[in-house]
Image (cartoon, rainbow, N blue to C red):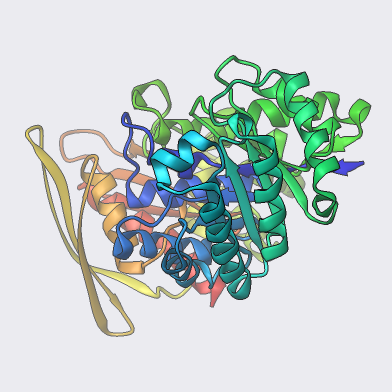
Length: 471
């Protein structure tokens, strides 16, 4: 069975859209979700603001576990050097060289004649190949180019060291059989192509992207460009589902986890869609697992039943922690039935109790309906005070972002809940925070008459469990 690589261009295409502007945190979150979903390649936006964009890319180098981190280089040797400097620390890195090959785009975008463009492709790709073992060359607007020049450009890129070649239907003019025929002609004209991976970027301008994809796969394509939330390419989730349904009969498969699509795609869409109210807010809505996990246990429940319920909520606990949770469960169950929220709270209070690496020193929150919320937080670590100030969408979002700024890294917020544990105007509020790291969930609990303070304590409590286990 032929394995089809999925190269997601959501981050790359984000800079071309006027309706959205992804924040630093959102770019990291999108990349982490794509990595977790199982896409093979994550293409980033080109480096425009060198300081900011390089920081994003270097942070992604440490976050991505399985996906290839691909960065556009532009058509200059200096651009290649900037891109490689930013992504060289990734576990899997790729330099992405894209050049227009149609006469109209060469003339108006690059002001180059065909011969000069071939020289540029050769120089840039060969320099990229001298730095990185994985170089991709994309023939932009290939479907409107002179075929003889397209063949020469592809051969030139392969001879210079490109390991993947992408044929782009930038103008969106190809029908499935036409695109398939073009792929066949390229293979016949450029025998060297059989030694590298052929990729296609199909346009969805005529709502036929998936049909074009399967036509190209049948004729030799092994990598497909997709995105989430845009209309320029086939949708990552729709293509993965199509391969799941028809893959066996066509003899193809992909690595995208289709079981996780319904959970992951809405999170990405919320960040990459201008109307964010359509999708659930990660900081206020319960997680997919929590909404679908129904727990109701009484005092007669045995250890095995409680252990199974804990696993269904997404936790991966040691035998010792399971025993601690069970002992606490019996105390609560003697008074009332234990549901999802109660079991979450028990796990947060009893499991993975560790010496605190980070301690809260103080915090100041500024918020109101006519101002952007800000948080100023001071934490201590090994006797040394660390502080940061951040803005956010509300006081709790600002507080969590500030803690991330102090840490210098980001953990996925899997769930966040607030509830009152006593009554009256001076009621105690309980906050539950569930953070996900390396596929595992760590929960923290905080109680205070100040619900923001309870949330901060809960976040730090969960964070300390992650740090302790990582160390």
